[in-house]
Image 1: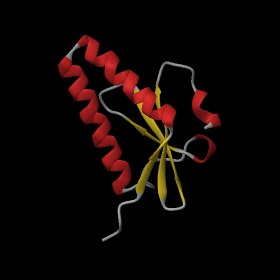
Image 2 (image 1 turned 180 degrees about the horizontal axis):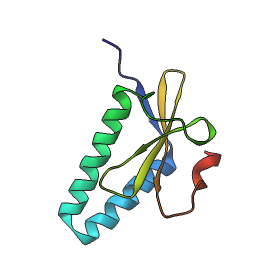
Image 3 (image 1 turned 45 degrees about the vertical axis):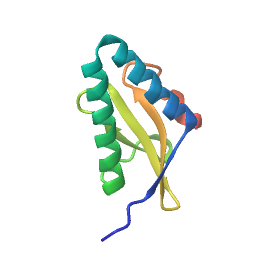
Image 4 (image 1 turned 90 degrees about the vertical axis):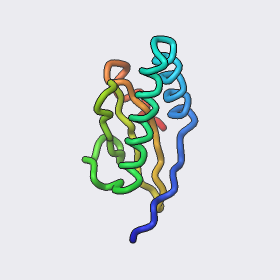
Length: 99
């Protein structure tokens, strides 16, 4: 069995996730719970097979959330998974590229 890689989160990716959770929570507790569940599912899938998703910009990969308009942008470096951004599909494309 292959070891599950460690995760590192860019502080701004954490803030993006927090802001999205708050936004959904202000609308509906149910929506907030669904968003968090989808985010956890995405992270688990990435940890299980980080090379499964197609290469994206600047050496990253992208996991598209199914139920929400976000993608987790990540890269694999030195056996670790670095979550670079939780990017909204309709906002400032590529804003995270400098991370």
